[in-house]
Length: 166
Image 1 (cartoon, rainbow, N blue to C red):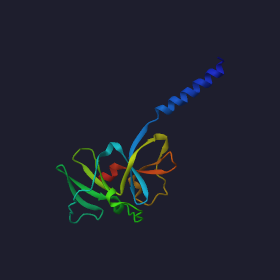
Image 2: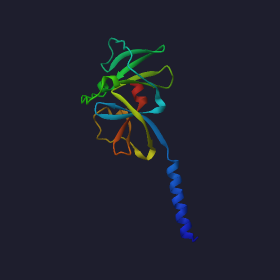
Image 3: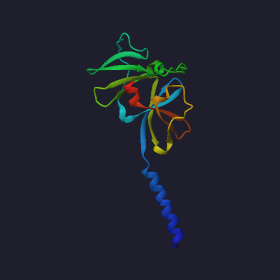
Image 4: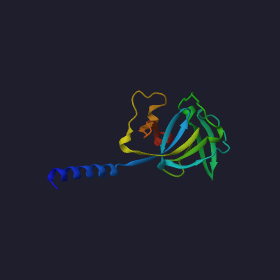
């Protein structure tokens, strides 16, 4: 084997290894109105059907109330109200879910109401970009990344730390 043939093979093998080493992030994708959003799998405690919600007086309108989740009192946030999403799109009331997010401790839980939960999505690090300055539909501070999916669609990745702290 000549040196150039060896070098080409080495270079090809190295590129394949680099692709295999790329970090893959997992997100749960869900729908709000007509758009798809994602949340890092590591911050999700569980996904539940909507239980009875107890209203709490004098809280912001996007906080629907609290639910009792096996002894933990969990505030529930309606993300469509929080993000001022008025384009409702079509959704089936039976598909609505609460995604329970876990903060820095298991006592720091927040539920987010979504129109539907879609699937687990694996996105390579190279397909994640910071949000554009042009994004203004929801508070940009809540968006951590924009994920490019293989089918050409995008996934708006929310910053769970900011969702839990605000």
